[in-house]
Picture 1 (cartoon, rainbow, N blue to C red):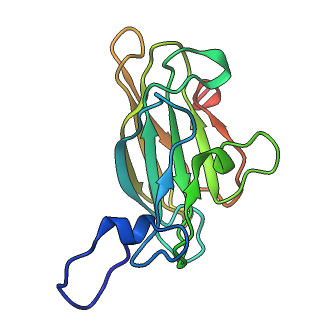
Picture 2: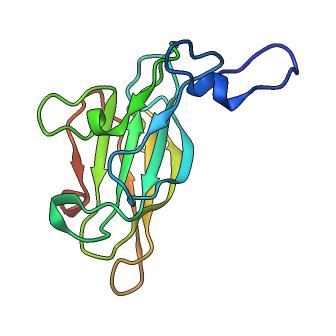
Length: 160
C-alpha cells in the first residue's frame, strides 16, 4: 500500500483490481506452493534510485531443482499501481523490476526471514539480510550488498 495523508480505510480488493488499481500494487507469486510472502520486509533503497524497495521470501521455492532451497525477491520501488509478477523478476533472460536471490542447497528454506540491513558496506546502497534456517548444520544468514542490476544472486556464490 502507498502511504496516504488521511485515515480512511483501504480496501485490498481496490489494490488488486487489475483494471484500476488504487492505493498500491499487488505482488503475485512465481510458482504454486513456493509460499511467496512467507516473509516480507522493507528493503531500503537497494538500487540507489531514490525509491525504497521491498524483499519477499518464498521458502519452499526450488531454484535450479533444489527442493525447498528457497528464494527471495527484491522488488524495486515504483510509484504506479500495476501488479508485480515475481516470475518477471526471476526470468532467466532479461529480468525486470528487481532481482532474485536463489537459495543455496536443498531444504535450506532460504527467505524464511528477510530484512533490510542498512548500508553495511558504506557504498551508498542499502543492503539486505536473508535467513536460511535449514542450512546445515546450524543455519546461516547472508548479507547481500545493494546493487543496481537485475542479475540473480546465488547464495552458493556469496562470501566465498
